Every structure is written in C-alpha cells, then in structure tokens.
Image: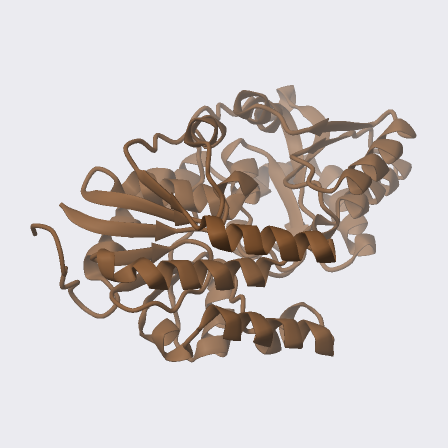
Length: 389
C-alpha cells in the first residue's frame, strides 16, 4: 500500500478532464492509499452518478485559503481564471508533496518535488506554442500566463522530468513543442457501457451536439450548419445536450431553438438519456476547434453514430482522419454532410465497429495504462518513499 496524491482543480466542472480524474481515482484506489488534492470540495456521490464511476474511500483535502483568494480575484474581474487556478493548485500540492510517495496530476502541468505523473490535456503555460496552432493571443494573454506561472512557482525542468501523459497524438505534438519532451499518448476513458446501437435503418435522421453549452464549443455554428443542410432537402433535426455555465449564452441558444422547430435544447441530461439519444440518432456534430481529444466523439462512434468534426485537434484520431467526416469551415461542413447524407452506401462504409472503440478507448484499458504509468513513476521504476512495497 503506497500513498498517492491525485491533484485536480475542480471535479464539479463535470467535463472530459474531470472524467479522466475520476477514472484515475478509481484505477488507483484499490492498490494505494489515495488522497485527492483540490481547490473545490467535490460531491463524490453526485460525480459517481454523473460519470458512472465508483470512487470510494478517497481522502479529500481542499485548499480553503487559496480558494478564497481565487473567489475574490474572479469575483472582482468577472472572469474564470483557469491558469491562476492551476497556479494555486501547484502551490497547494507542492506544500504537501513530501507526504506522498507519488503525485498524479490530472489537470495539466504541475511542477512539484518527488515522483510526478501528469496527464496534460493542454499545456497551460505554453501559449507561445499553442497560439500558433489555435489562433494568436494578445499581450495581456501572455502577461497573464507569465504572472500565473510566477505565482504558481513553476519550474519547467520539473515538468520535463516528470512522467508525461496526454490524450492524443495531436496534443503530444503540442506538448513536445512546448517542453521538448514527447509524452506518452493515453487516450481518455470512454464509457461504452450501456451503448446498444440501434440498426441504422431504425435510427432517427437527426444530429446530436453534446458537451458544455459554451461559446468556445461553437454550438451556434452547429445550429446554422443543420439549418443549411435542411435547406438542401434533408429532413434532419438537432438536439443540443450538455450543461450550461454561461446563463446569457444558454438564453441565446434557447432563443435560437425557439425559432426552429427542428432544434431541441435538452441541456444537462442523465447518462441514460444521453446514451439513448446517441444510440437512436444517426449523426453527431462537434464544433469545438482544436479539441484536445473529444471524448464525446468517441461516444458517438461507440453508440453507432457518424460524427462530423473539425479537421484539427485530437478528434481526428477518433475518426481516423476521414475527409468525409472532417471540415475546416461551416461551408465545408455543409458540403461534407450533404455528400454523406445523400449516399446511404457511403454512410455504412464510414461506420466503425463499436467493439473497436472499446479496445482503443475503453475504461478498463485506461485503468490498466494509468496503473502502469504510476508504477513506472517519473523516471524508471518508482522508488516509493513511504508505505510497504
């Protein structure tokens, strides 16, 4: 039994990164004494229900003083300061790292002493690299990064010396550009349980957009794409599924849906409802550019749907880079979708065996890879400082 800390800013955000963190906790809890270090007190019962995980017996420590500072700064600015959150987490974890045999970070970069395994969804402090790939940022963005980096007490050498994991081959390139070290690709855990794909001919000819209802997900573009596909004679509809963290944006989407009988704003739904929607609809439509991986895209495939995704980021891994399923612009999305919807034989050719999704992206596979990474530690075999081997 060894003492392992898992570090994550806020599990209650309920995104793909939080799914990774919950699965890391579940993967390690039987073999190690696991403590969660976080800024926000989690409701593990709610999270287990949401992610269909089974995290039990994990000690939780929260950085109350640092969280109060964060609340004050975010309240004053009206902004969600993700890099500052990571900086405060780094300070908190660094103060307690010597109490553990290893630290596993699941919320991007940490630089703390001792054996460190970290799952980098995207480099928080590498805007000079990331901006070239996802669009340029201004002086204030870079100044904010630098300030957060200094406040967090980051050390790039410690990041390079840790055992780095990431979610896709595209993101591995980004991390390598940022730190000069290529991480191992460990695809996130896709929960394929419950998916029972309905035969293609029995599915509804509609689209699903699943994920946080936020501007950076380009949900409005998805609505416009479906509008234009309908103009080409395809009788399709669209469900918008996911939690909303921006009230004004949700109201904007609600107004768009109210004007269109073919658009349904579902909001946050139960896992059972989500699985049912995926298994009974033919198409998924993903709008986020430069997605780190795109777990929902893999869920579309697991449920027997055809996903259309931007032609960038880690989501290309899921669709094997097929041109028919990727697009660079709204106009191109309309053309690609029109082509596929007009050709039933092409639709069947593009479908992926759901069993292949389980082998490539399943939860059990993820748990095994996480346990191996922690056992290996940051450099070679992990020399545990506490506990009994």
